[in-house]
Length: 349
Image 1 (cartoon, rainbow, N blue to C red):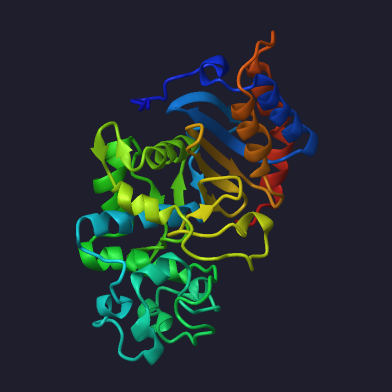
Image 2 (image 1 turned 90 degrees about the vertical axis):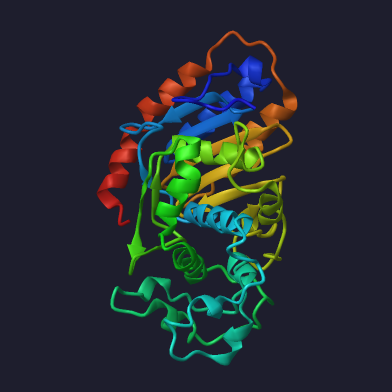
């Protein structure tokens, strides 16, 4: 595995043993469908095969990656478990006994692993209505339960906020500061911004990073938590976090029906992904040692770009063609200007 210093080492399509025609077809499809992608990067064995950014964007442009934040929070919990400061079987109420005056008795069964698997029993997500004046812990532990704890997957943000709060409670640091010490500086990410409430990072969303940062995080995941010989988070934790932990067949979107780990989505086509609103993705494929990072502002699905074109190009392998992929990447940037300008006029987030 090749680890970057200042920048990722480059690899040609031939060196990566990918089919150039299918990669070109992907850029043609993006142009044909007018898909609003801000930036993409593909790694093979840690080397960069391509990077492509839209008008007025680069791979270093920092943006909110929404629920990709959850996977960073998962890794923070994994590091705490490695340090033996937290256990998957720990009861969540234990951490907040000083902050909670009253609670629904059913929450006495809630464990850390239930927060990680979105099986807290809540269907109401209080995250969006919390204000700095609220006691977020009191609010959380008094939400009526719709299901037995651990029984059913119910995607929401408040559970990950509570995991962020556990990191702060145990370490005395917000998740962002904790990860700066144990993650960012070791893999070459400059400490990012991360939204917070009452000195607790959102955990579930609000992390602002670049495509480069996403690719670095993805490479760490691909290499089982090890960065150039230094174990950042244990392989044992990541093995559990990135395998099927809970059934998600009732999810609204087909791509979400393959299951969920510990704040990671399982892919129907193999391995897993970090995913955020408006189609932010870090896709991990271990069969071909691929990391695909994508930032977008789209309602339409873009994950099939990886499945249909990139993964298939790895299966097919390299063969000679006379033209350059650089031409398609240049056209991608030039042709995206109208999409980006239209987005800025109507964007509400």
